[in-house]
Image (cartoon, rainbow, N blue to C red; front, top):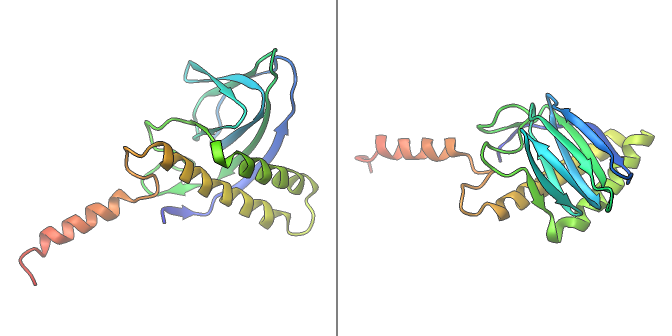
Length: 182
């Protein structure tokens, strides 16, 4: 299990449909996860634009410059959450993705699950009723685990995200050191 530090949910919210809205280029010192609840739009990361649509999940690692723009014809509605204090084995702080992996994933069979989690998380976070912090934190962790599953399913040719290469290297080093022993 490669999650070293339990991430902290910083915020959760929803951006409702509006014709042609645009978020200017910005970055965060934490990780941000965005789920396209409806519509179509464009995201731009490091100057490269691509289309996103309903059911896509977008993972912005810390300090990744990004911007979003809704389509005027099919306005986009977004769910989002910010995660701080995130630490995964062999990744910089507040990174869910290793370098080189895509940051947009169609959720496919998990779409209803992400919708349900955000639909439950956002009102809890906004109302701040008793135990809201624990409830929203656990919903965020649940979504992170499903994101890892989704990422692994879409990157089968590469190492699994949650497998620690350090452990593998240590095991190989141990075998080499003790090869002559019984």
